[in-house]
Amino acid sequence: MNEQRLRELAFFVDTAAVRGETIEQLTAKFPDLTVDNAYTVQKMSIDQRIERGERLVGMKMGLTSKAKMEQVGVHEPIYGRLTDGMIINNGGDFSIEKGCHPRVEPEVAFIMKRDIEGKVTDAEAVAAVEGVCAALEVIDSRYRDFKFTLPDVVADNTSASGFVLGSTVRPISEVNLGNLGIVMEVNGKAEQIGNSSAIYEHPLRSLVQLLHMLARRGEGLKAGQVVLAGGATAAVPLKQGDHVRVLVDELESAEFRVS
Ligand code: OOG
Ligand code: MG
Picture 1 (tube, protein in one colour):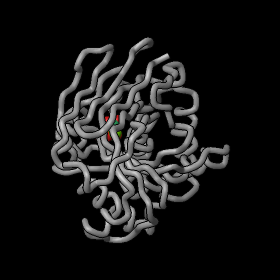
Picture 2 (picture 1 turned 30 degrees about the horizontal axis):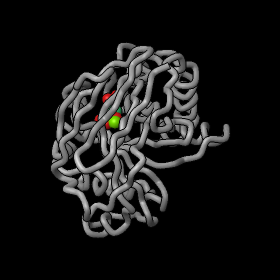
Picture 3 (picture 1 turned 180 degrees about the vertical axis):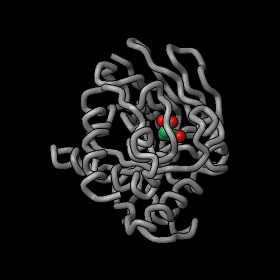
């Protein structure tokens, strides 16, 4: 697919995200859109945000747990990009008006302390991490009915919409990262219960996989960036007034309200 076409698709998905309007899947009109093309569309659409003044603050992995794959019917891990425009302060508000049909999912996040790129080992990845914290991700597919194929969801920046991080970052060596109980409460009721082991068997594997996927396109992570490891459970639809909180064993909670 030529660059002009990819640029048009990037403009199309970015406009839908800005307006909070749903669109038809890109593959309905362009069935030859490859996953590689889709990552180019994603990058171009985020470059448009950056041109408008947003800043890249990290990356996210998606579809790293069985529950997530089954919920959306796409069975391969994917990555997307996080900008400062997506940050929800811990205890702050997410405005539902700017969304299409947002959902929330419980995650854990890595904070990087060093630049890192390439086909790294687990040990090299650990050495580049400052620590981990509890997180919630708001996903909001721009596609009608939240339905998409693999290239569609990649082009749509893997449905990224918002995220909130817990306030305490703990070193990996101090937590049992591969086996942390996770509860996501909505309005004080446990809506989803899971474990960090559901995230690619171990969230660290998710980080390493991200670096390997980025390496294929000559990209990496920078010191200070955030990495969301992927939803541990299925996502839950949000409605105005909801208060959402995630509790992760050994890590602090993270929460926000839907306004
Ligand atoms: C795609 C994004 C998946 C995760 O954590 O699995 C994701 C979607 O479900 O819309 O962020
Ligand atoms: Mg997610």
